[in-house]
Length: 339
Image (tube, rainbow, N blue to C red; front, side):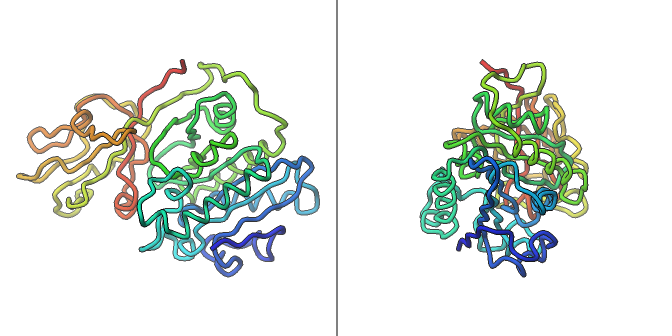
C-alpha cells in the first residue's frame, strides 16, 4: 500500500485534503533532507476528515521552499481515500490510528495490509534514527488544543508542553501512532480542535517548526505548576444495540444536545448526560485501561436520567453520530500527579 518518496510531489503544497488523491496514489511516506540528519517524523490525515496536519505541513514546507530544512523531515500522509470524501475512514477500512504496532491483534488486523504498512513505517523510521514523532489530529466537539502522550518521561512531557499547557496521558486505545513511536523516540499526539479553524493550522505549524529547530529535549521534567496533566481512566461507548439521538428524534438514549460543552470541565457526581427511554437498561459501556467494565463506577440511571455517578472530566464529546459509532462517545479523565 505504501508509496515512498524522497521529494515533495508536484501539486502537494497546494492540494486540499479532498484533492490529495489526485497527487498521491494512497498512503505515502516522504523523506526530506535537512541540516540535522536525525529526522522529525510527522503523520497527517490518519483520519481523512482531520486536515489541520496537512495544512500545517504545507505551511512548513512552503517556508523552506527555497532553503534547507533545519532538520531532516519524514512525512506520512495516511488515509488519502477517506480524505477524498471527507470521512474519518471508509466503510470496510480499519481506523488508521488503531492499527499501528501494539494494536489488539485480532485476525482481521493481523492480516490487514494497513497493519503491515504501519509496521514498515515504524521500522524504517527506527533505522533512520528518528528524533521525535508528531501525529496531528482534529476533533469534532468543543475541545481546547492539547497534547497527548503515552509515556511520562521528561522528554515526552517537554515535547507535549511545547504545544500546550494541557497534556493528557493515556494507554488506551491500543494501536495508536504515538504509542508505536513511543518505543523508539519522544512522541506526541496533537489535538488541534476543529479542522476548519485557521488558528489550529497556525498553532500546529509553529509547533512543528519549533521542534525542527530543537537540538535535544531537556532531561528534567517540566515544573508541575507549569502545565495541567490529566490521565484517561475510561473510554465510553454507546452500546451497539442501543439507538441514540440528541433530542430531535425518539431514541432509546437521548443525549443532551449541548453535551460537547462539557469537554474539559471537571464535572461532579450527578451531572446529567441525557435521558433513557422507559424500560431500557444502561445504554453506555465504559472500559478502563485494562479492559475492565467500569460503567457502574461512572454512570447511573435515576428516574430515566443518565447521570455521572462520580466526578470526572470528559474529552472528545461530540454531536457527530458517525464519529460516535466509529470511535466512542468520549473519554473520561482525572487529574494526574507525577510521582
